Image 1 (cartoon, one colour):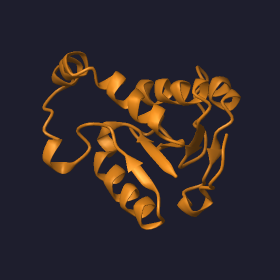
Image 2 (tube, helix red, strand yellow; image 1 turned 120 degrees about the horizontal axis):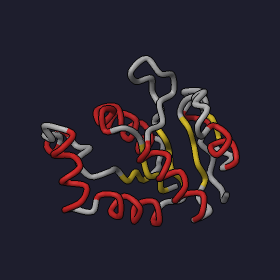
Image 3 (cartoon, rainbow, N blue to C red; image 1 turned 180 degrees about the vertical axis):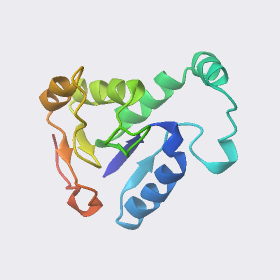
Image 4 (tube, rainbow, N blue to C red; image 1 turned 60 degrees about the horizontal axis):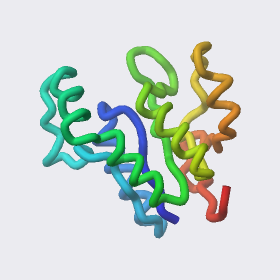
Length: 139
């Protein structure tokens, strides 16, 4: 299965570790740009916004999602919030949903009042931290 990894870029190191585990299971993994250690030198939020515009990083990862069979949201705890799903990850879930791709969440759906219902409506598969629960098949 081709899996596009999504999540906060603060989790870039974890993305590559999880990607290696998925590859060992026989999956092909597509990463957001700037995930690999050699490319993680973005100094500030202003620089991140500039790169997102100049390099059209949202479109670039959308293309990864289009090529994938599923996405995996790495929703680790962040800033004292359990199962963090930020704006980009939520957007990527929306892309996957309308493209009829399977959506996996590594951890439970966060209790964010402002979009919990929308996440539930996209019917993600919650892995409970267990990558072995990823199944082959269509959405």
